[in-house]
Length: 374
Image 1 (spheres, rainbow, N blue to C red):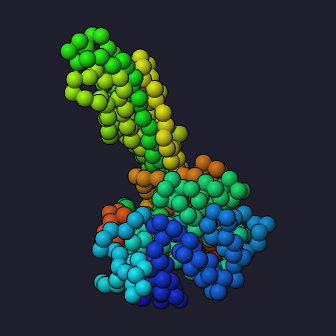
Image 2: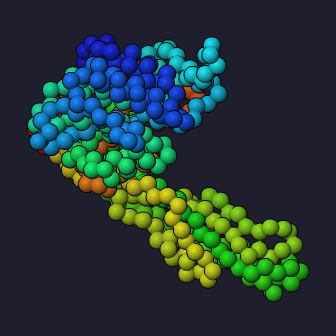
Image 3: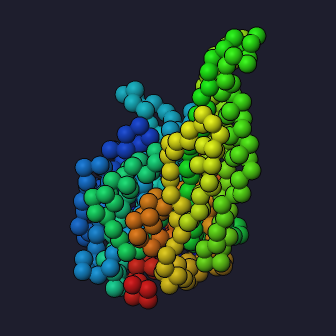
């Protein structure tokens, strides 16, 4: 039992079930488990799209939609997280100790997916259609979320159940009102080969690349403020690759750049193209998120404060989630979930059962108090 009541019926068993299903190479089996549980345990209208995303809806479809959003794919497990069953099939190792569930995907984010599923089962939505959505491909650039949005998924509000626990203080589950995005790009500098004994006969692509790197180093990091919270991005050169031999002036050099973007701002990386022979190309752009509706963000924070003894706050998150894609498409988003900093993507990944109970109560309280913002 947590500080605000009994455990939600079946939440812990459901979490264990979902975490036990391998879903790093192929999320189909995990999607099957989510879909089957929703059909058997809830009154929701359940759909599975062609991409593998799973949806469950309750309430009046003519009302604004509040979505509880997660994903059931995971990153590849570490060696301690994998075992082989009697038939030689790969399974995930799932362990319970000290009030926590250990296993790949427990924190990121099958535990919170289970909490959202139970909330959809139990909530009586007030003034909204309540929609559960579990996407595929979040770990590889938001593939499922982007496909769902392209197909018309457009909730007015969304609580994305990624981690927000222990951000402002230990022992609290906060509400994220903004997070950074990530833009991955390359600078390719081109020159002309020559023998290194007569470098003046060529054009050194590495030198051009170094001039472009100097331009990047001089850039100010992007920064903004969301609901009084400061969000500061970053720009870093992370790889340089050029040249073919010690005695050849290189004709090509590639520079990799990691940029953490903030809502409404980008570093002016295109300026590096002012260096002769340099071309800038964006390889990936995961959008940042800023909550577009103060009343919604305040309502979720009020719900969070009502179900825990600590005092949660509006906070920001340092990395991208599917909330970025939804916000870019016009949904008012916050992030609120059980994962704690340092848990996701580790060989010792775990989630607190007490915090999962808390998240269930937050999600249910938001849905049942939605007439205050919808």
